[in-house]
Length: 173
Image 1 (cartoon, rainbow, N blue to C red):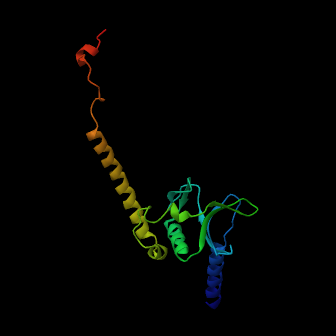
Image 2: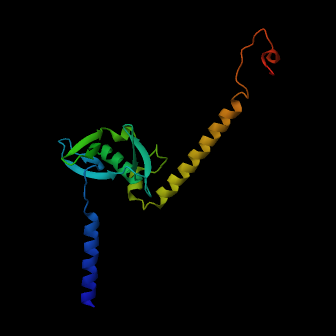
Image 3: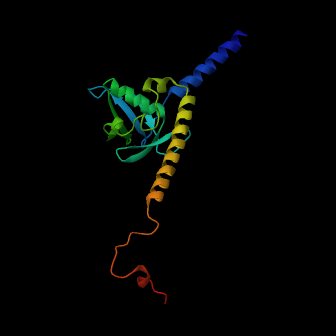
């Protein structure tokens, strides 16, 4: 029994250590937090493709896909006076892509009303509900805006009055 417990513990440790290792590949984008002297503190990966649990955002005019927790982490790091930038790994080092990411994407802009601390600590279920609700709400707002624009728009384009009547302008050739 002791051997079985020991084997299970070793197996569990090997899975957790394998999951904690991150392989950074050339071409990857990361949100990186640094100290004032440029020393690395922490990072979150940013994605270039849609996937489950990710939301589309725009940093410095370029589209990316991020986890809401990444946006919350970015806000917390900025609040803690760390320098946070979106950086690109070109294989021989890092290049800054966006200097102030919190100027472009916030939890509020994503439709998430929870505090950044709460988002970081959440299990994700509340975030999935909030992001779904936000998406549904936005679709109704778009529909309402379209309906308002259509109802206020004239049925026919505006026409300046002239000496001739409308009937005289129409030809039935």
